[in-house]
Length: 314
Image 1 (cartoon, rainbow, N blue to C red):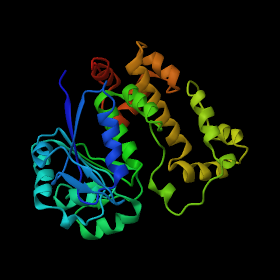
Image 2 (tube, one colour):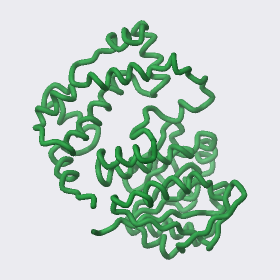
Image 3 (spheres, rainbow, N blue to C red):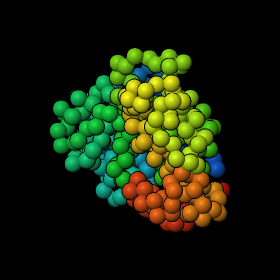
Image 4 (cartoon, helix red, strand yellow):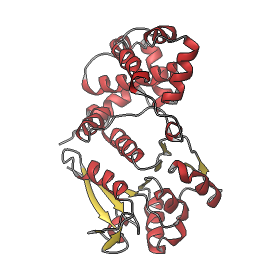
């Protein structure tokens, strides 16, 4: 089995949780074909919390990676060793996947690989990233940005969302969901960073999570916004406003994403026809399913099934 080489580049003053997230997701799940190496410009790297971590890999190991992940750190991008920046640029030039978690985006920007691209970082530093690197289009609202070869995430726990997204891209929704259960994380979180910026905490009794759970249990039939509002005992207008504030999406947008997520799982794990899957996910018809699937994922249901049903995870 050919393994996908993942290198995590630990820079000076690395954020321990940012470092631990990819190490856990790509290093502990041995049923996934990843080979993880933690690399750095030195054999030992200081963390933001006062202790140091031993780094077994070198920059030479990082340069050979299929995917290079740069966790968050506190030193400004221009204080990153030139050899580390050159490593990031080299992996990108030869077609490797380059990823950042939190403030790791500053290193990617300093290496020049984000020029002309969309990116994100922790909400408290998005303005700084945009000011220091005006050639980068900084999106302060999202949990992560997927530009294909380049991916960046928001702060800390958003690294989990991004790493699970990478597993989903590589091996499908079933594999990503299995990893999410193992690390006790949501396979996919709704909304973006806006929900974390000085927002009042929503009491559990006031949360719309129960309505979303009800909608997920009823995806096989048409679900309207007024019906969801009745489940929440609210007017449709109040419900829609609360729903957007809580998830970052309108109810109809959220329902469509949920239906496509369910479609992906059924394409991977069942032999149902496209028409049967359309019935089970509430998308109505095979034509409607194909249109929304291509719009959201850039591929056809048949091509998706072929890719992920034939990819064996040993």
